[in-house]
Image (cartoon, rainbow, N blue to C red; front, side, top):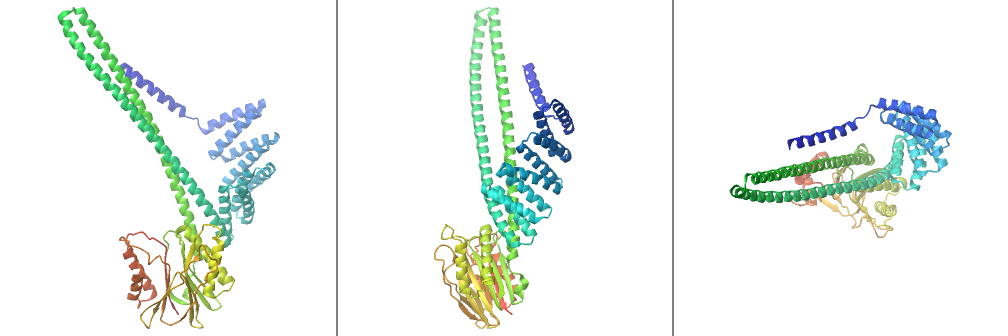
Length: 576
C-alpha cells in the first residue's frame, strides 16, 4: 500500500514540475535573436508572408518592453513590404503604429508626420472608425505640442465622424480634448460647454460599464456557488457509498469469524488457511478502495480550491476596476466643482456695497443652489436660487440658471424683477424643451433689485420669501414670494409680483433656499423657520460674520451625526 501511495505522489510531483517547466520562458533578447535569425532566413527564401508575421511579433515584443527604437525599425520594414505589395490596409496599420510609438517617446513632430500619412490612407479607404481613431491621435499630439487650434481642427473633424457612426466613446474623447483646449486658450464658455457634453456621455458610459461589471461578477459568483454545491453533493454520495462498504465489510467480518469457529470445530487445517486467505484479500481490496476514494476526494478539493481562488482573484480585479472608475468619476466632479465655484460672485464685489455673510453648503461635491450678483446702471441685483435636485443634476441646472440671468440682465438690460423671473421661466422651459419632453426641473428664486439712489428695493420671489429684520420693531417682517416656481410643465408665460421696500439704515435682509429649515435631526424633526428666526434674534446685536458663526454652530448641534439632506444657502446683508 505504501509503495502505491509513494508512486502516486511521485507522479503528481512530476506533473507539477512539468507544468512549472512549461512556464519558464527565454529572455527578451534571446527571443529577439531567434526572431532575427528566422526573419533573415525567410527574407533570403523570398517568403514575405512568414517574414511579415515574424516582423510584427518582434515589433510588438519590443514595443511592450519599451525597446522603442527597435520596434520602429521592425515596423518600418513591415511598412516597406506592405507598400511593395500595395496592401493599403496593412500600410495604414503600420504607419499608425509608428506614429503611436513616436508619441510615446515624445517625438511629437515625427508622430504627427506618420499620423497625417495614416489619415490620408484612411480617407482613401473610407474607414470611418479608423479615421476617427487617427484623428484622436492627431488632436492629442497637437495638444501636447500646445498647438490648440490645430488640435481643435482635428477634434471637430473627428467629432463629426464619431457622431455619424454613433460611437459614444469617441465622442466623449473629442469633447474632453475640446474642453481642455478651450480652457488652455482662455475660452471658459466653450470649455464649460464641451465639458458638460463630455461629463454627460462619460457618466452614461461609466454607468453602463459598472452595470456590466456588476452583472458579470454576480454571474461568476453564482456559478462558483453552484459548482461548490454540486461538489458537496458528490462528496455526500461518496460518503454514503463508503458507509455502505463499511457495513458490508463488518457483516462479512462477522460471518468469517463464525465460519472460522465452525472450521476450527468441524474442518481441517487446510480449510482454515483458505478462510484466512479470503479474509486477507477482502481487507486488501478495502484498503485499496479507501485509498482511491481518498485520492479522488483530494484531487476534487484541490481543483475546487484552485478554481475558487481564480474566481476570487477575478472578483478582486473587477473591484479594483470599479474603485478606479469611482476615482475618475470623483475627479471629474471635483473639476466641475471648480467650474461652479468660478461662476459664483466675487466676495470683493459684494463687499463694496454690503456688510454681508453667506452660508453655502452643497450636499454633495457640487450644488443645485447658487447665488448671483451684478451691478447695472447703479442698480444692484442679488438673487438666491434653489434648483431642482442636488449633486451633478442640480449643478447642471445651476449653470443653466446662471447663464440665463447673465443673458437677461447684463445683455438684454432688463431691470424689473418680476419681468426677469417671467423671462427666466420662459427660457428654462424652452432650453429644457419641457413642453415636448417629460422634464419638469425648475428652480425657486428670491430676487432683489436694489436702487441705493432712490433708497428702494424691488423684490420678486418664486416660492421663496424675503425675511427682513425691522430694527424699529425689533422683529421680522416676511414678504412671501408667488406660489409658482420657475420652469416645469404648464404655461410658458407666468407673471410674478413686484414688492417695493423702503431701505432703512439698520434693517437686515435674509435670502435663503429651503435646505437649512428642512434639515432634520436624528429624531426626524426639522430645523424649521422659527428656530432660524430665534437664532438670528438671539445674535442680532453681533456683526453679520458672528451671526453666521452662531447660525452654523446651532445647525451643527441640531443636526448632530445626521446626514445633510439638501443643499444649504443663506445670505444675510445690511446696506452700507
